[in-house]
Image (cartoon, rainbow over all chains, first blue to last red; front, side, top):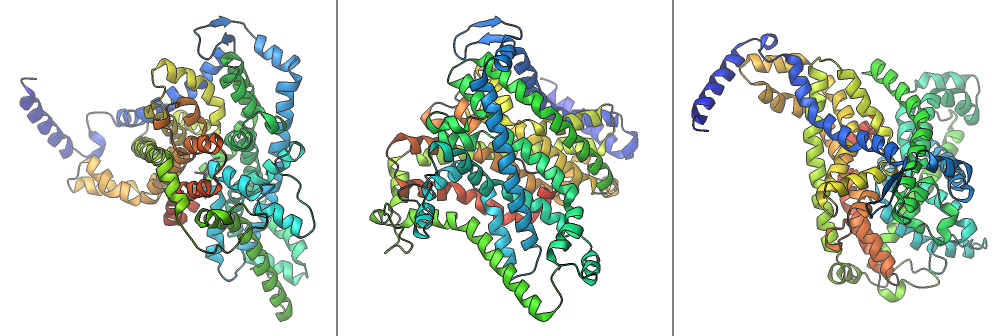
Length: 318
Length: 282
C-alpha cells in the first residue's frame, strides 16, 4: 500500500504506452478482454439459472423437507410414483395444463391475427387503437386478476349484468365447471397482444403487389387472406404459437392468483400449480423438484426447435 | 392496403374496418376504463345490481384509504427499489457481455452466447424450487438482494441477445477512429457505442423493469416479512385479507399499472422493435 502512488504512476505510464499502440497490437490479448467482459453475465446465468436446473435434477432423486434438515436418497421413486400412480395429481394436472395451453393459445392466435389484420388497414385513430390493443399485455398480472374478478363478479360485475340484460343469462364465471373457460378467456385478453405484434410486423412487410395481383384475379377478402396473407405469415405464426404454447404451459401466476389452488382451483390445477403446491404447501421439495424436472423435459423438445429456428434467422437476418 | 377497388365496396369495407377497430378497442380498453371509474366512484355507487356508468361525482377516497390504512406505500417503495436495482444491474452486465461477444473473438464465444439464449426457455416455475433452497442456504431469504439477483438473471440472456444485435449494427471503424483521435477504449465505448445503441439499452431497461415489477412467484417464495413485500404479493394479500373493498382494490390496480403504462408509452416505438427481435417474454 505504501507504494500506491508509485503504482499509480506506473499504471498511468503503462496506459499511455498502451494508448500509443495501434489497436491490434496491444499487450493484453484481445480475446482476454472479451472473456473478462463476458464473465459477469455468464457467471450470473450459470449460478442462478443453469445450476438450479442441474440442482433440481439432484433434488428430484431425494426426499427433502422444505424446512426440516431431512434429506434421503430415494432414486427414481418420485418419478415412478408420479408417472405410474398419481393419476389424480400429476396426470390430471398434465391434462388440464394441455387444455389450458391449447385452448388459450388457439384463442390468442385467432384474436391476435384478427387484430393484426385490422391494424394493418388505415382507419381513423389507428395509432391510438394500436397502443390500446397492446395495453393488456402491459398490465401486471395481479391487476389483471383483481380487475377480472371485479368485471366478471356474479353479483356486481358489469359483464354478467350485460349478459343478463341482453337475455343470455350469466354463467357464474367463478364456479367449478366454468373456471377453466374463464381462465382461458382472461388469459386470451392478457396475452393476445404478443401474437398481434409478431403478426403485424410481418404483415407490414408483405409486398402490396401480391394483393393487387390477387384483386385482378377477382379474389374476394377471404380468398385473399387464405391465398396471399396466410402463406406469408405462416412462418412467423409457427414461431409465435410455439412460444405461446411454451409460455402458457408453464404459466403459474395468473392461475394461482385467480384461484389459490384450493376450492375451485381444483378445476384449473395445472402442472405449474401442482408443482408449487407440492413444494410450498405439502413442503415436499424433492417431489416438487421432480415435477420441475418433468416440466423441463417436456419443454426441451419445444425449446430445441425454437432455438434452431431463432439461430437460423439471426444468422441470415443480421 | 388489401381493400377492394370499387367506391361503394370501399366504403363498406371502411365501415367494417372502423367497426372492428372500435370493437377491439372496447374489448381492451373497457376493463381498464372500468377500473379507473370504479376507483373514483363514491362507495354507494360501487356495489349496485345495475352498474353505475356515470358516477354522480368523482372522489379520491379509495386512494386515501389505500395509502393511509394499508402498507401499500411500503410495497410500492419496495417494488421501485427492487425493479430499479435489477434494471441497473442488468444494463451494466448485459452491455459488457454484448460488447464482448460483438467486438472480441475468443474460444467458446458462440457456445456461451448460445447457452445464454437457451435459458430464455426456462420458465420461473421450473427454477423456483431449487432456487428457493439455494437462496435459503445462502442466507438471503427475506432480503431484496435475492429478488434482485433472480430478476437480473432472468432478464440477462435476452437483454444480452438484443443488445448484441444493436452493437453489431455499429461499425467498428467508428470506435477505431475515436481511439486514433486519442480516446481510450472505455471512452470510445461510452461516447460512441452506447449512445448509438441507446434504443437497445432502453428496450432492455423496460423489459427488465417490467419483469421485476410484475413478478409474483419469486417475491411470494423469497419474502415473508410484510415490510419487505413488493406490490404483486402485497396486493394479493390485501385482496385475500378481508371482505374486498373494491374501490380500494381498483385504486391499487390503477397505481400499480401507471408506471408500466408510462414506460410503455414513452418507449412504444423501441419496444415494438425489440418485440420483433423477441425481447418480450411471458
